[in-house]
Image 1 (spheres, one colour):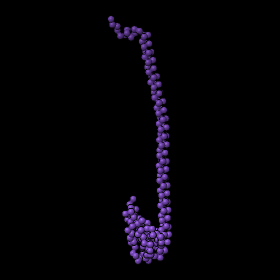
Image 2 (image 1 turned 60 degrees about the horizontal axis):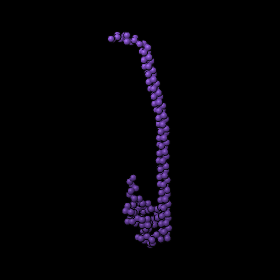
Image 3 (image 1 turned 30 degrees about the vertical axis):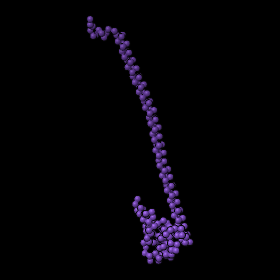
Image 4 (image 1 turned 60 degrees about the vertical axis):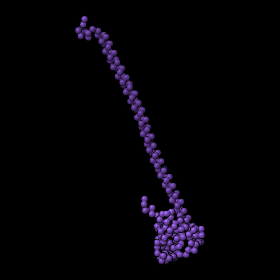
Length: 192
């Protein structure tokens, strides 16, 4: 026997009310669980944001440490470069003084092969100086008359020589007939 639909709805109003209450309670419970899960996710995201901020602070510290390290490396290289320049300059001054003293006393060429101990002309003394400095195949480019005219005066004598297979060109400065400075440059100075 079948009942009409209107009678089914009105058949048990109490059980229908309880079912609606259960349904409302289940929906409220589900909403509470969803709200609680969202709150936990938001708090976890907040903690991760704090950790991310801390990591960004660490990145800034790392960048500053890298810049400090770069500056200290550059400073160390600069200091080393200056020390090497000072050593080179000191060595050059020592060598020039030593050669000047040896020229005065005539002792340069006694210990060095190829150097004439009895060199009297200025071009011979220039050749002896360059030989003492380790040069070979020395050519005095200035005319001999000009060089000998500077024997008691000041001037520059153009020379060409080789050291270690590399050609060097430059000049020898004369002051009062003495060799004051030797300025020879290799061909590599022209290129960066």
